[in-house]
Image 1 (cartoon, rainbow, N blue to C red):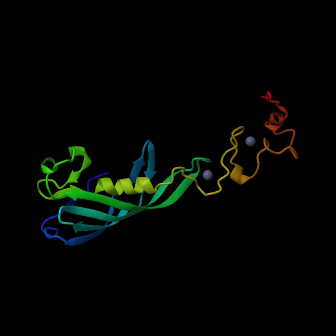
Image 2 (tube, helix red, strand yellow; image 1 turned 135 degrees about the vertical axis):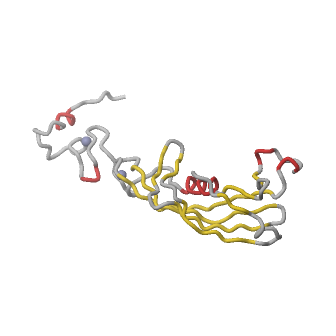
Length: 179
Ligand SMILES: [Zn+2]
Ligand SMILES: [Zn+2]
């Protein structure tokens, strides 16, 4: 994702100061592992930044309409995704904080800026269902003949009414070795 650079100063210089940021990122997709979810309408965010004294707390939501393929039937699936954005950026440079490793902590850069794109993407990834389906009760494809079972039963799983001319009718007479 393209960076969303936020400047903490001067508005967030004081303890307790906060700032609300809303907008839409002009991003047409995000990734979860090898999977690409298309977001043609962009990614909306509604963030609150608060100076907690030692750092800037980032909280809020990120949402989008995502398009992907159904894991069962491969038809297009449309999902409304909304996730909680969380982040924390130390006001002190990390190497002056005792007891913390560099990579355990985010901090503001020298100019008092940070990039909120990472936490926004993380919120979407976390909110994306593990198995993406076109509808909750998608019946998927027949593993034998590949028919879309949402459009009705295929020849393989019905023992009656099989048209003998159906090229798949023969499959019903196949005997599998019993274990
Ligand atoms: Zn499906
Ligand atoms: Zn079938």
